[in-house]
Image (cartoon, rainbow, N blue to C red; front, top):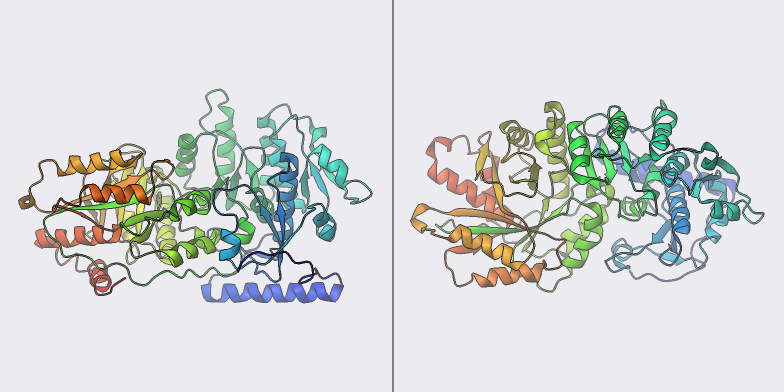
Length: 580
């Protein structure tokens, strides 16, 4: 359904009995969403429209009813962007009613169209301050001289049901026209540094008995489409560098937040330093979800969370003594990539002409099921979704403590199953996968995880194929981050150099860098065409690659035949019996 302008279809109720009726209907929707999950008692945040039962990684938002008010902030200044994104989060925490159109790579109508949204385009966004005034407790003013107070203001606004405003915007909102009270003016704190801001956050908000410790958000102080999510969830927002060489206190301060978080908790947003940031969260058993450039998650996380993934995939070819090549697209563990960049490359006209494993994040089941359903709905038989690093969200698996590792691999298996994916791209700091890590994936992913690819950050893993717990195969990336067609072709040429079919089949997993302007489905199709005359090279999908790898292992290792007569062999037979 296309977007259109309307001024009469939906009017927000203003009478008391209408509020009660609306609240009752919304909660019936929430109950309907919860019943099939059979979770334990739901633990909700301060807003009735947010559902976060125990065992669910991230919260869901209430069902939508009626058209949404759409604000376009593309041509507004940064101060206005922050203000109206905070309004979106505050209003949507009860029920999604505001959609903020921000600058993005993909077609601006894609996600509203995919969700069948009807919107009321609001020319003057300040009109929504008046419309939703009864839901706004007041204003939290940040100090422009200390930019990190934007994050503190976001934290306070989420707790107190307020808007985040600059001094200029606060003057407008406190005027006779809007008459919003100032709850907190952070200029009066006279913070001497960013560290002082986050120490204050730690002492006064994170340490509250009712503070939510399952989620910490990392954002640079400034405009971000993720601020609506932070305010809606009442999350604490920080921007601290675990790898700072000029301010080592930042790491200690950041760790003081992490100590309060249980393994399996979530860090959503991003880091000043990726390597140090992910290393530190991994050591605490916390999973990272890159989402600082994501937008409208309070809308995308609403409604049904059922994923309509296909039950059957491509049939597995007959195993011969050949070189089997599977091509992967990188960086789908980023929520913002799934929303923006991936959508643009997905539109390439050559998509579907060559098998591709597209990495995505299974946490989309919680955060944005509409995005995941879009990719499954529009996938061709040659498009396969696989989990990005390192399953459910981004961790360095060899850095996880043992208990946290088992929690993570169990969560990954559960969410991968819900998302309809059964292959994960595993990252770590070592060459290859430590035995304890591979065994954890195998034991906790039984019946859900078919195979895992491995790489050592940006370096090529030289360890070769490996099997864990007699059931789970791992295969190193022979090209971990190919920048262009030439990089991919050279990796195949190196593998084919001196190949003799009498030595048996060979299996290659190659990953293309989705961020590269030289990488697209057209690029991968051209690579396939370069080798179309070589009868020894066959391009297959990721699932086919791992099923062929398993079949070859069974064929050449009779001692493992009984141990491997498990669900994975049966699974291969089941998939092979159906045409995509």
